[in-house]
Amino acid sequence: MIPAPDRARRVGIALALLAVVVFGVTRWQAANLAGEHLALGRHALALFIPLCAGLLAMVVAQLAGLRERWCWLAGIGLFASGVLGLAGWLDQPIYHLRGDDSYRYSIYAWHILEQGSLWGHGGVLRPAAHFADQPGYRYWLAAMIGLTGGETRLTQVTNLAVLLLACGVFLHGLARAPMARWQRLSLAIFLLLAAPYMAKNVIYGYVEWFAVALLLLLVVSLWRGWLLTAMLLLGLIPFIRQNLILFAGALALVIALVERRPWLLLPFVAVLLLPLYHNLWYAGEWRLLVTNRGALLDSQEGVWSLLRNVIHLVAFKAAHYIGYHSGEKPLTLFIAVLFVPLGTVLMALQLWRLDGWRRGVYVLLAVLAIGPTVLFGGGSFPRFVFVNQFAVLAAALALVPGPGMRIRI
Image 1 (cartoon, rainbow, N blue to C red):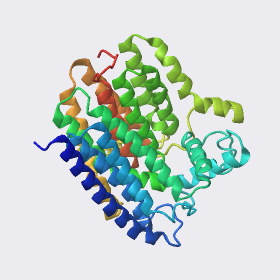
Image 2: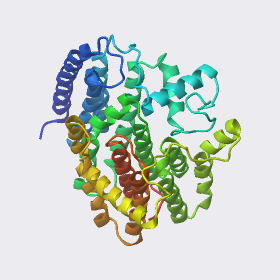
Image 3: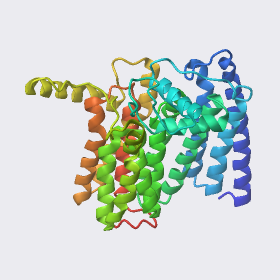
């Protein structure tokens, strides 16, 4: 056994060497950003490195049995090394392709800042005052643009840092969760393998990464017994991605019933109705759901035709959950294959891990999480698979008590 002081010294030296490597590689790739202002592209590869390196360091440090402070030091240290490699490019303004979701969120966010109002739509892109697209992220983006002095590479890096912190909090809770070591190991590896896509989702300007960050914090809040915090987070998740509204409502109901504290539904519903408040105030409409929510099915079809199309969609989308999409480029498929198959296996394993009524509740929550995007979601692959897998796994973890958790399931 290596004495503790020697072990700490060796870990410190290894981290310093890795930090130099991360800095060098990031600096080398950052040169590709010259003259390239598009948010995402091969020129932006350098932006992937800080999150991937930081999360890799956190996972490896935890699996090696290092103390918590070393895990945080490793993750934040390598992330900071990558950010230093981006020096000189952090103030570079970015733009999004016209028509992309990220383009619309950017327009909405700038509108909020320029008008000095919480009016999140204002008819700037569509002839309506209500929310047409996913409502919540535009406010976060507006705050980040204000914080970083514009929509720049620094805005992207700040969001990457927020996601890394959420992952670190989750890994800290996971290390103390009441489950077998192989289960903790598999979840940590899944999180690590998802890092490249998480980085891509952030850099692209999509909203799913933020929903995943909230899901990770939700699980930790339940493990710690912070039920009010958990219900507030659960209410915010559909505000970011409304396809999870049925999932969030069902999970909130389960928590309130099992805990025998029905009042917990009040803060959840209060946050859940944020889009309704907005649409009532600014558009005078009793509208909760966004209007841009996909149209893969035609409600005017006959029953048999509709059933046939549903079966076709389910079969087509099933391939997405093994990491395959016939219309995607090889690089996109490679990033998806890194984590999607493992995520699907982990979702299936929860059926074995849970028993009794918890298994039935888990299946219901999985259907409510995945079903809406199977039938209506037509977004770029694998963004829906990504957020749905994290939602389903979060549900499984929520159904098992952690240290200090007051939900006696």
